[in-house]
Image 1 (cartoon, rainbow, N blue to C red):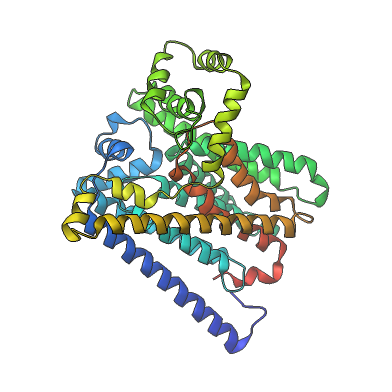
Image 2: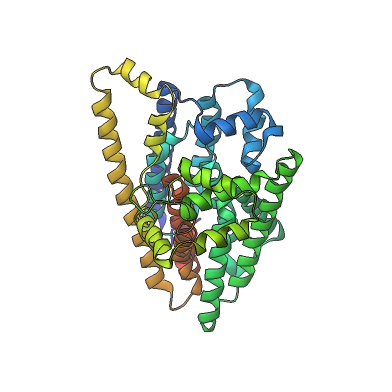
Length: 421
């Protein structure tokens, strides 16, 4: 590890400063998430309740993949839900923080600071029984393993570990199956159009990614078949499709959101093959109707709403705990926190988009992979124009963009390679 533009004592001072920032950020993440979880003690509800119950009885398995199995390993300890999830989500967040700093080639580690800031906004989410952050950590690990200095080649075990990490992510969040498949198609298009700029490794990288996608899908399907709940795949996937498009409202902000009406409509079509049901629904409305739904959803897709504090505050007993501790100020405090989170999240989203665009503009003439951060964002947009939208579904979209930007920068700036540490 060497700081090529700074030698001697200046380089050592830079390393010491970087490490102080790293440990300070890690400390803040741990303290903030643990304080919120143990002070408010959120209980599982909605999807979170399913994960918590299924983790103790895998015969009820319908979704959750490798990370649900990880939760199930801690269930025999008898810990509370928030303590169990802190034990998993805090290490996941710290691993993403450490990975981002390890690969960040920018002076001052600005990309890693962006990741740390985004993780700080997610700390209310750490004590909930959600698998989004765990899946994001797995996918981040897959990307980092794939990032390993392309000019020196990748070791066989590095490739295997990247595929396994990708499989764990996809099995946990089936959304990744669609997003990563769309990403591969977009990058295949980029490779076909820009093949003359010397980037021959895109097909191999995308092939490894898709191998992880296929492995993750098979793991999830195998767990579902073992629990004799294979039919749940049709139900779960259809709910997101009907909520996102086929039975969606055209009014903001309800458009693209889950609703009881959409679920009821989906259930009324269970007697038909899915392809037939989809075609029938699409044919019953003019194209302008489906365009109106997508246009309505675009606002939530391009600028996803903040979600971490909202889900924590919505958890049973959390509101009561806040009122017990702050009987007069809790409603005002909740509104203030919600307002602050919303604007902080918007600012973070804009900064991340800006870095993706600047990376593309700077490197696209010499490296087709400069499209990767933008294509990653675009893949989420394409998928969610059709499927259900929720703020939490975009957690990985924003969180992993800085890592992808770092990859592009490291590939095209050899003098910076020694700055990771």
